[in-house]
Each structure stands twice: as structure tokens, then as C-alpha cells.
Length: 95
Image (cartoon, rainbow, N blue to C red; front, side, top):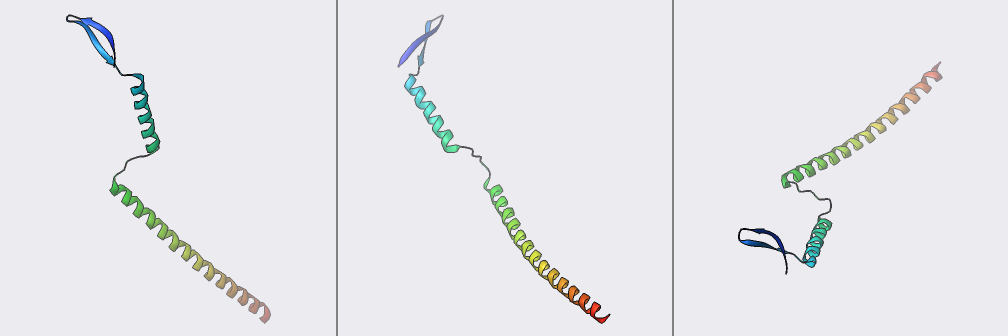
């Protein structure tokens, strides 16, 4: 390992060891690998995730119910329109 002299104090020069360039490169590579693995991640509590999943499932179910009701309303509307048209044609025939 390489050593370098930094400062002198009352007891003499203070020696500081410098890490070789290979160790620094390896440390940077490890950090880069960690960043690649983590990417854009966040940590959340399991209870919050569970609550979010439940809310999304409720939304999906409610959306399905709403779509079904809209379909039923369209059928009723079309039947009413047909009845109204039939009534109108009967009314004009009787004149």
C-alpha cells in the first residue's frame, strides 16, 4: 500500500495511507452496480401498499359495476325510444 507524508506535528511527520487506484475503481464499480440494481426504487411500508392495492381493486370493481349500469340504462333508453316512436306513429294514424 502506498503512503504519503501529510503534515508534521510535535512528534514528527504524520503518515497517511492512500488507497490504490484499483481499490477506488472497484468501490466506484460497486456503487454503480448498486445504482443499476436499485434504479428508480422507493421503500414503502407494506401496510400502505396493501391499502393502495385494496383501493385500486375497489376502483376496478366500481368501474365494472358502473359500466354494467350504463349498459342497462342504454337498453332501457332504447326501449323507451322505441315505445315513444310507436306511440307517436299511433297518434298520427288516429288523426
